[in-house]
Image (cartoon, rainbow, N blue to C red; front, top):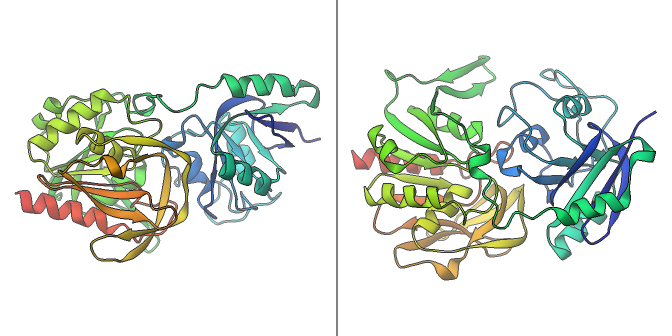
Length: 380
């Protein structure tokens, strides 16, 4: 007999369903993601720390889970909400079912939920604090779950970057996996053209692979690494990674980024890194109503007019009205008009709010990595 699960939002909305993960209780910010594929990548994306993810596509788990497609080595999402998990999964790369993976990783998850109703609530009222409970029917306590949801402090003001960051610097040499032949590209100090230092605020593996694919030797450093330590590594450029939480409390990162830009190093900020670069340039960030989470977001390049479909995952954004003269807007969302890209006018630094590395998602925006390489080439 399957175990039961319960989701309660801070406004009192309640959803009952079937447990497809481990027993227990988990509270966090409930968000929705509209991607049709990539549930393993979403669950393991550090940007989802302290968030309970609702997947709007109805069938989740069809292709199982494998050991290669994680964007980090652990699940960072605080929980998972889906409409249906198939009893059978099928894919030549699959190694286990999604429920087995969730239970083994200690993730509370619920299925058989009316995700359309839930998504409407989140879209109209905004992302809400919520609590998932799973286990025997008699252990599910609505009032306890409601209190846990309301006790969650929320992501505004929460510095999660250092919580998910690596503890020590390390080199990364793995490039993208190729179907034919079944190999993974690699970069060494002898073959690499550029040396890139990546600030790990919650970096996804595919960002690192994209750099290796472009002949970069990659050194990943902790979120709190001072600028002086980065400069001693003599990099050709610095990439500021994605990550979870509110960028505003990350004073240590903002100060380091300000110093690195002052030294004229090429800088590329992605998602949280883009927001931190804006703060280091004296712009402001704001909490969004329900954020952008999906793989089908149209973004326009303001210089060329070209429209690109992008992968997005953020609950905070740079306030375009706060941009100083040294920052210009480069990209804008065609969904809600929010700012999606910025560039410094006085140094080789730029940022993009979405995910040019995708995983999951389209590759329309991946040329931004080539732009970064071009800045490093020009700086030599």
